[in-house]
Image 1 (cartoon, helix red, strand yellow):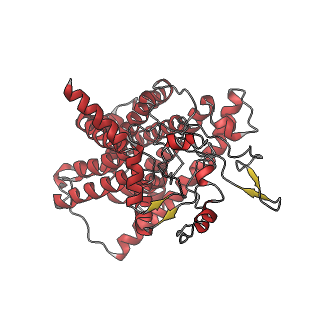
Image 2: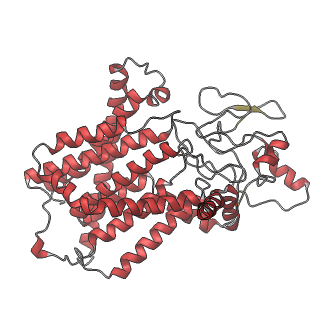
Image 3: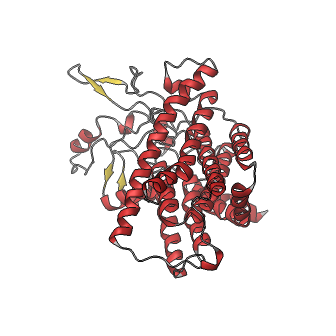
Length: 453
């Protein structure tokens, strides 16, 4: 009983948003004057407290159709301020217009404020940060922004194609299998536990793109742990390289992603630790089955039908949402991509394309990097990624109106339509399924045709 009480106290300590704020200040992130006040003190001043997960109120009045509410300045002119603060944020008050003036009136030196830097926001939610933020350490700012990008779509659409087209398709296929399962289980767990993001204040939100999602566990921490660790597990012994290099990669990659989520104010320390341990647990359970799953995808006659049906069923029946968030669409996107890659792998195997090296050639020796080799790798990446992006754009233009028509949903407001499950799931699943299929089959066929394979 005493042990449980100590664990409960430790969990509460690690979940305290003040610890996140302390880490941010240690790294040189400061909000406006008075921003570090705790939520209870903010309520005593008459300011709103932390908001529930996914809420995104308008600031000082509603907007006028573009997601940016209008404010009046002293001369009666119109100004613009971001619409919502998202989970755990408070509007107005500490983040308002008068913060820099108040600081100068107090006789203090002006802070090195990088203007109203708007973090990457989600076009579906309209969420944006409206605090003026002082960054005391630009190096850490850019470093941790890089770390958080290692768990975003832009990184995935560059990293997985590079692995498959330029390094080792065998490793790339299995890496995507691990990634799909880790991200799927992480997203589902978030919507079962339903813990909110760290309260703001005292936390300064440097990112709001995923602010409508729940917090526990951190799926960024999960992917930042699972991808490099699985990469080393799959490649070591198949390729000749010192194990120490792989361990250094795992430690640096994992640490950068995990610390970046605390720095950005999106997760508590407990969220990150739970994500790290959860990813390791999933790897322990699923890694022995990766070869079996990949062989099934390649060789079983009816594998595409089973893969598509299974991934679609997981997206539809796995969990439900009390309110809309980016979680459901992201899950359908991940499952669709995994299904597309698996189907593309099956077609490659049946047609004898992108054959894996025979076992007697292992372990593989990394080739010497030459200008020709490097140039072809970059050319493959540029051409292929452009084609993947065009595929995504075209499929998006086709699937959203088609889903709206099939389910008799008005298509005049695309943002509202995309938040409905009847539109969101088929749009994401089909679009990213086609992206995954192009990644694994169509683009390599093009490379073979133009002599770039």
